[in-house]
Length: 85
Image (cartoon, rainbow, N blue to C red):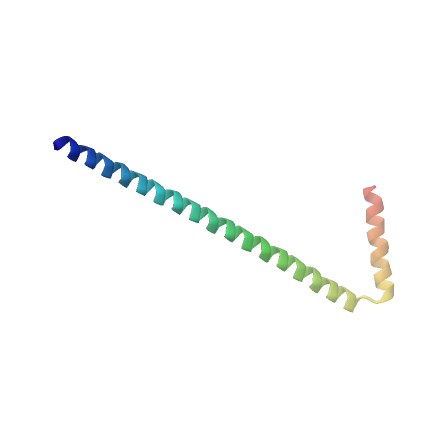
């Protein structure tokens, strides 16, 4: 009888250790998913912010430049590209 009680106790201890380990694994998996979701949201926000900045800059530039200034800007950009080659 005593052997059965010892065996039952070992089974309970093993089951408890396994349950604790399973909970830890699930917590780690949940933490990893949360971090991945946070990284995804941050990346999406950066992309949207960049797109908004480009759209805003484009609107400001096109509303402020006349044809002469626009052509000068293109010429300067072309000259800078030539320097790179």
